[in-house]
Length: 190
Image 1 (tube, rainbow, N blue to C red):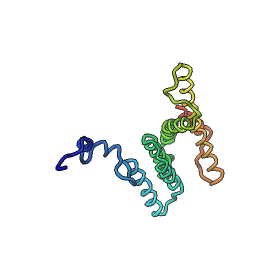
Image 2 (tube, helix red, strand yellow; image 1 turned 60 degrees about the vertical axis):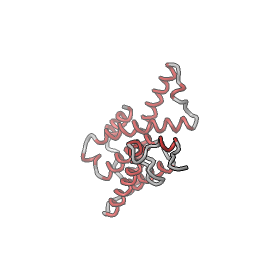
Image 3 (spheres, one colour; image 1 turned 135 degrees about the horizontal axis):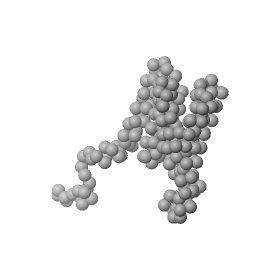
Image 4 (cartoon, rainbow, N blue to C red; image 1 turned 120 degrees about the vertical axis):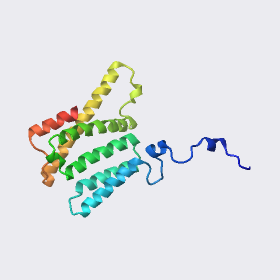
């Protein structure tokens, strides 16, 4: 065979394409831009810790992000989890909850919004809930909407329990007033 190229190889674009840059499949270790964000998150946590600052929240968030990579979450949900960990963990260590009044509301809106879909997918894979495409009747679609709202509310309520538990057991000061908790739950529901 002199100089002939298989038809499949000829159709394959050579070099770097926008799809490869954005969507990835760069290597086995660093798959895509999400892995770069994950590495930056962990590296920043290490630098933060080496500077003598508390890192417990960042270590926990780093572990969650590394676990997400190990279980190979679909990329949209992986991205959502990275955003959530940045908002929650870095917001805590940088003091954004205290320095910017609206930050807590942003977090309480964004976290359930991004995590609800991920939990829905997990419940579908476990066979607990049906695929969205299987819902044909109006009452089934309304039930799906109601389930999504309730999942978001449950995420928010669960987080409020975590905050209260950390206040009681670890001496943190996450729960403000009853009005703060109620506002948090409203934003979780939105």
